[in-house]
Length: 314
Ligand SMILES: C[S@@+](CC[C@H](N)C(=O)[O-])C[C@H]1O[C@@H](n2cnc3c(N)ncnc32)[C@H](O)[C@@H]1O
Image 1: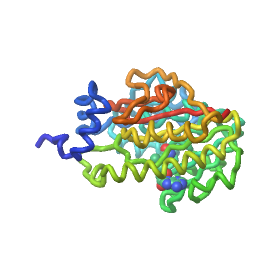
Image 2 (image 1 turned 180 degrees about the horizontal axis):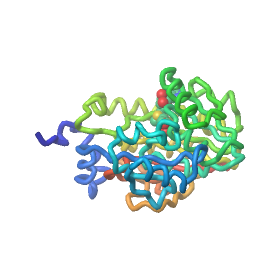
Image 3 (image 1 turned 45 degrees about the vertical axis):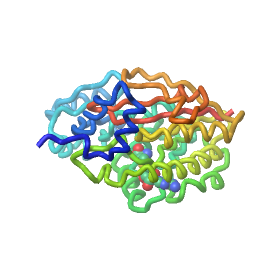
């Protein structure tokens, strides 16, 4: 039987139609179909030429993307891929391409002090470690115990166990690390609308507008903590895998107003066709004009819906 997008909450669909009037049908297609699996290189364990050779020898078919560098679409059976040493020994990490973009936009580089405030299961922490290398002080914070252990396991497999990990509520890092970091990533807990899939009712069953508002409240507390943990001149990246403007532009607009002349939003230039500017209006609310510097990634057959905003602390 063909799945129908109308199994998704009606109010949610109505909102998507308002946010993306021109892309509504295309976005609905992505809720109905399983996305292609994608993976990226782990530079802590291999280099690009060796990885291409290993993939060929293991008979794993792939398409290499021109950007972000080191990203691949998997064209072989996932079980075959997961049985190979390439996957088991952590030479690669299975990760959606939208998520891979984040450490590139943050500009993680050797020698930086970097905080990953909501880190588990560690896709972006391990990517930051892979890009920035061992001479970088990386601190990964996670609140939920079971997820924290998953993070530890992934750091180990990926050879990134030089990353310092802390199990704690991210809202307290402001006290533990005042103005300490050059870069802070807040990949915030969110309503995960970008991952809704009609064949997996658990992905959308608990969606309610009230939950969106609750998440926005948490996100504001976390972004405030992230701001205080950042050095002046440092960069803060806020991201979510959700569409709701309440959890995206509204949180960023709230932070810009709260920290007024101490913070600014930076333009993001990334070479992907499905990126759109952040909204500067949602329903009756008008946001600061610089919200157009934020990026909305429109989902497609290999990229999840994502939101990315980059701040500079003055
Ligand atoms: C979107 S996920 C992060 C995904 C991760 N950055 C990655 O790329 O693999 C958000 C994470 O934040 C954690 N979290 C939720 N509230 C938190 C808080 N107050 N402090 C720290 N972590 C929190 C969740 O348990 C979840 O693991």
